[in-house]
Length: 476
Image (cartoon, rainbow, N blue to C red):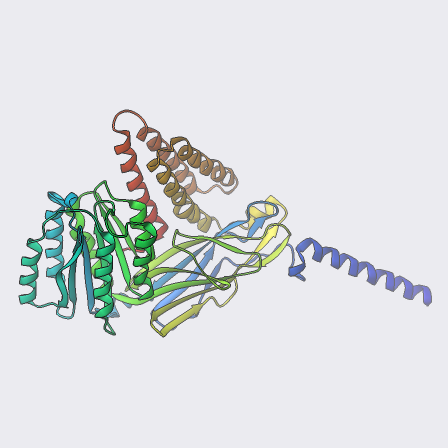
């Protein structure tokens, strides 16, 4: 009897040792979690309002000892049918127009025509203001309600605008944003559009100072969009200002397209169903938020926050978030809590995923590739990874760094082709051919005559294309 009990004790001890060894292999923080989990790739937040919030992971696993990168596509959308039901919101539209000397000729002619076009689209409940800036800023049209008499007077005032002087963008931003903040009314949607064709060279011309000013729009829970006209503006600054102001960035080669930009931004503003969008991520242990489609990331205690702006009726915004997942020990890891808040002031609605996204760290490549969500991974590569690379390449081209730009393209191709050899995604294979075309464009920009002109044009067009692609659905 004693011998039999000893055998039971030895067997029990072996089971405990085996269990503890398994725990050690999986990581101390993941007791009881199997090394491989089938997992989920889709998540959603319960919603009874006009906004839905969903997520799709591009994979269920990362590979032990590798880079641990994973992406989740966040979709923020107005509920189906919202476009037909949503009432038109009274809008305060403020245009901040560069009238420096470089705006002479067709640029100022088209800008004046674009302002007159938008005046014709304003409704009786809307208000409009026009601020111009050169050496200093001034109010060409004060913020006031629209009627036929005002429209006629404003058109006459617009016709008098003449280009002259330098580019005091900081003064234009200060004055335009002051107009919005001092005349703010409940139930109205403020929307600001900043236009420039050159480099800020008067007042506070620092990127930090200008970006800080644009951030007033985010703090006020309205949008500041930016429009770069021609070939001489700083596309990185204009993108940064739009990001800080939670608005859109536009690159307009032909100033004759300004009217279409104004119309799109105004139409989106007056059909707003949710303002002040803020995505909050509370990363799980060891998880790090790397990027969110290029939006500025704010640290708020244990949370990471980014602000994609507003949502108009019928809109669906898709934003890829890149995460660094622990890959030092086999096991399953919580990616964290994902929430969306929207609204004005204290009247905010919060939507959170009903389940916590999780991802496994696995030993074998077979396990890793079986965990790839092929359609989601394909979108992550084509939409986010490629265009993140394209933005970086555009910046290198702007700075004259040909070899570094080509190295970035080649690195993307090598890494993506290596994965796609196993996954066999047709959209990704096509995107690799697109990368070849980008590389050819980079090489061509550094050959022959007028290289700085071609490099500048490639930088601007590539940056604008990449930003638009990474923020699918952001524009009307």
